Image (cartoon, rainbow, N blue to C red; front, top):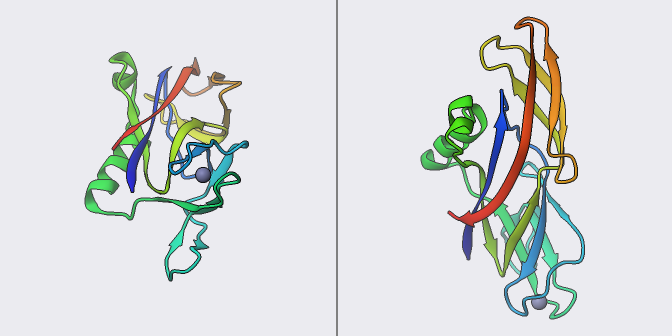
Length: 169
Ligand SMILES: [Zn+2]
């Protein structure tokens, strides 16, 4: 089992990551074959693991060696909650200015590894100083930037150069 952290970095004025379906590229650890498609991992959805009473957020069978693998976001330990809060509530201007990576989630991979993350989907952002909420901020690897206008602050807001990486947790 390998624990991996899904991290983001961006030049931005105010982002907040929300719980959503993580789009991952996964690779089988047994035969090193990569799944041909992006697969979705939704922390609120669970699937049964064959031959066990356990459940995981994603259960997939390698098309080459036929081995069943699974991925789950880690259980909500105190440490995890802290890192999740840090990542989701506090990817701040300061983090951005200092080019720090923020951990969005930690996933446990059994029999496989996550090799890439596409931040595809809707994100929620909050104006750093105004507190203005922006829902439905659409980002992805193809479209890693977002801009809008914050009426309350009288300034433009943006998420720029969103980068993602997978690292050992
Ligand atoms: Zn395989």
